[in-house]
Amino acid sequence: MTTTEPGFDPISDYDIFAASYILDPFPVMDTIRESDCPVAHTERWGGSWMPTRYADVVAVAQEHETFTSQQILVTAPPAAQAEGPYAAVAAPPISSDPPEHHWHRRLILPFFAPQAVAKFEDGTRELCNRLIDGFIDRGEADAAADYAQQIPVRVIATMLGVPTDLSDTFTGWVRGVLEAGLTDPKIRLESRNNILGFFKREIDDRRANPREDDLITTLLASEVDGERVPEEYVIGVCNLMLVAGVDTTWSSIGASLWHLAQHPEHRRQLRDDPELWPSAIEELLRAYAPVTMARIVAHDTEFQGCPMQAGDRVLMSFPAANRDPRQFERPDEVILDREHNRHVAFGAGIHRCAGSNLARLELRVALQTFLARIPEFELVDPSSVTWAGGQVRGPRQCQVRF
Amino acid sequence: MTLGERWTKGTSMRVRVDADACHGHQSCAIAAPEVFGADDYGNAVVLIEGDIPTELEAKVRRAEGNCPERAITIEG
Ligand code: HEM
Ligand code: SF4
Image 1: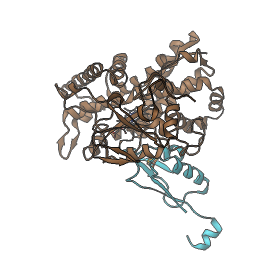
Image 2: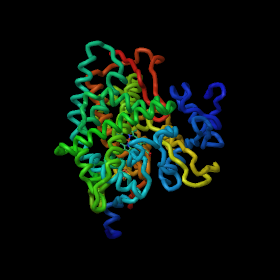
Image 3: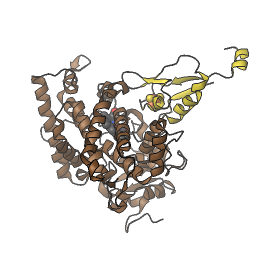
Image 4: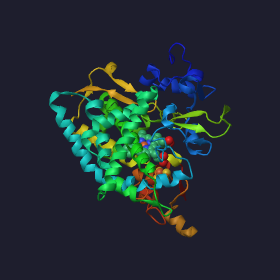
């Protein structure tokens, strides 16, 4: 198996933005994981470490005192982010460490409990049906751009009480932060400022016109230790919900459809045995985990024999962890009724994805609705599928025929 | 349960969630919705006090095997 492009050694010089890695990162992850040095290192893109074994990735996620969330994207923020009106705005709770993390997270958890997200199911199904109405007569569609990409942004806009007709604008901003912006500081800063500026205006509006049953109004009124939460917290939470809830979920829906397009036997299994859905969703999340997060090392330490220094960046590749044969039998196979699946697509430890119940609901409804209306479909041309990668991996163009 | 009851009924199963280790993945409730639920914050609660009915034991084992935080302990 060839795993390298010229000048790209997986163990000492990996490049998460290399075209070959974005297209198919698994051979590189396997090479690192099975080497004598399963925690790889690179100087590229500001430098980082990358553990690849399940146990190591989970340890980094759980040991939040050593591996902090001062920065969580795979490349450092633009220096100019530390200036201007929004310098104090972060993305709580994902960018917070204890002790603040506790209340930063606790205030939003009730919005995401299974009982709380259930109310989005009918609306999500209607949305999926409407999208399918738009292309079903054509006999062909882009499962990523025409379908997957359109769903989570509208669900989250509804949840936040902001106009769904701005969906394309929101999507552009999110991609600016999580895709193009990772290697282009200007795009990243512009996108961030657009998002924060937008939510600042929404917050001003809610102060003037409070709404019933509204997430932003509720957050603005919440108190911690007898004091109103600061405005930066509310802007930061809205920022995170948009950024964390869109690219991730759409990547998951898109990758699952890409898989199902190539596996008629899995489509058939899901049709014949609807009880398979819960484990099938977990298995698709495992196999196509979209998210890689970063941590910053708090103090000099040795981790699996690697000398890490305070300030070093560590990448938590949940996709690599989820394919570790030490943890999962036949890790590269999608086994829809996999019995034991401790996958970490949603992370682990105190930052475990707060939106996971909503994400699963969206993924299930999107796939069920698609399969119900379009039982048979295939890729028009496997080589024309394009992917995004780095922080969030998923198909961006994925033409299917039915 | 006395030793005699244990003998006639077979070994009983009980289940516990370590609240400090649980971070609300809800993988347990997906595998065994009869046994695990969520509190207002999405963290796990065990819905069955005492012995797990025999017909649910397999589901509880599956729930344990799906918890990424290893927060579930099966006794018996
Ligand atoms: C399939 C879709 C999704 C995946 C794979 C995913 C993955 C993740 C991961 C891996 C983390 C951990 C971050 C870390 O450890 O630094 C995380 C955190 C988070 N996610 Fe998601 N996510 C998804 C969808 C969503 C959705 C729909 C929302 C809702 C808005 C959301 C909101 C959050 C929040 C608020 C956090 C921060 C939790 C904390 O730091 O305490 N995510 N997500
Ligand atoms: S699967 Fe584990 S961590 Fe998740 S809710 Fe259940 S007990 Fe808690």
